[in-house]
Image (cartoon, rainbow, N blue to C red; front, side, top):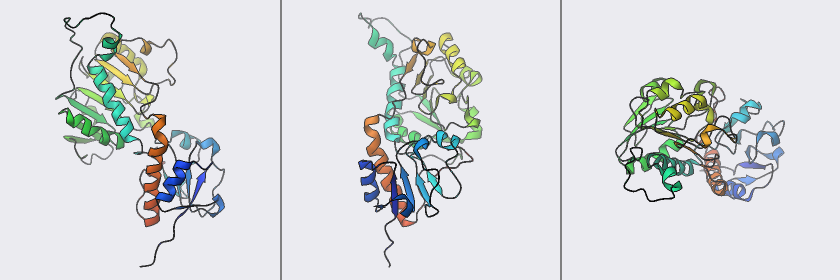
Length: 308
């Protein structure tokens, strides 16, 4: 059989060594933009070329969230575009499990204590063992989280756009049935894409259906939760708490009530640590370059209409 030529890849705007290695590992060769049939971009849309050569058939973007790219009008229909969706799933899943456990175990209060209080009964301290956890938007992050939850014998409700069964989940629901999970699960992980349709996916009605011990973890986008409604629920104690790596607004301003509410855990959008980004993205790029070279479907293909 004839050997396929190595795909010609332009890496921009500069020669990131991890991505360059990933391109070569995937079987590609680095070329100038005017010779490229694919582009791997390492920065945001503000540095992206105003126009691409007609020879470019695929563009790999560096982020899982592509809202700025869509807002800038960069993504077109003349070629395939892929995001980094799935590249960082393991890192974010680890953070998700950590913050869920920290919340359910009331770790914030435990760590801030200055006296021994072991004999005091605190009904807020619970366990994740054997609970039902709903993963709303069970894509790459959700799938990476499932083994962590399975190790704690959790029952897992997965919500995806299509409703196609997710491996490892006990039940999978399509997005149009997401309303069923709020009263059925003990805890909730929000990992859905941010679109016009998912803005305030979790609002007053959804929060009201949760139990007083429920924790909600958001590792996707702050706009998926109605912040004012969440603050009210946390203050009233109608839910157990919230662990938020993303907020609305973001950055969360100094003095915002979420900073001081004892049942709120805030991390500054660090579920995907910067130290692990280059290598994780390089692995993703290597895989997609290999798929492109073989003429196989790419990972993380962007649907501009759907918004992710």
